[in-house]
Image (spheres, helix red, strand yellow):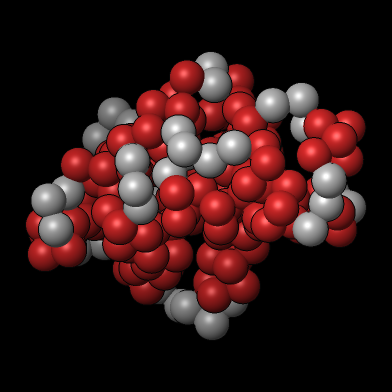
Length: 187
């Protein structure tokens, strides 16, 4: 991704955070990025295309941040905490404060499973790698690293949109982590 595309996507993220996905226009994004609308349209054909690319950028940044932080963590428990903080908790308050946050979720899911899968796969792959160390324990319970990773990520990600408040989110994530640790024979 070139610098101009990254600037456009960062502008889209900023504008959507302030106005909501539905109210954000291509003109708003172009203005925030400091480019003309024709320049924006030369790169992205519509707002949906920008949103898919912006979500991919956010996901890539989370993967990079988690990967860096895991270098100093020594236990699966610590790595799960890092993952949850970077991929889930940090976005919860932003989503709850965002105008029309339900539009973000609806817009995201409307993009189709291919775009959704591509944007999220890096995070799931991180978890597969983490859980791979406990493949035998998972097999004894009828699961695999890939199955647990998908379950863990899908569940924790949905909590960003369903938790009532920060305490509720914390409770949901704690229960998910504890269940995961039992599955991994880490308790």
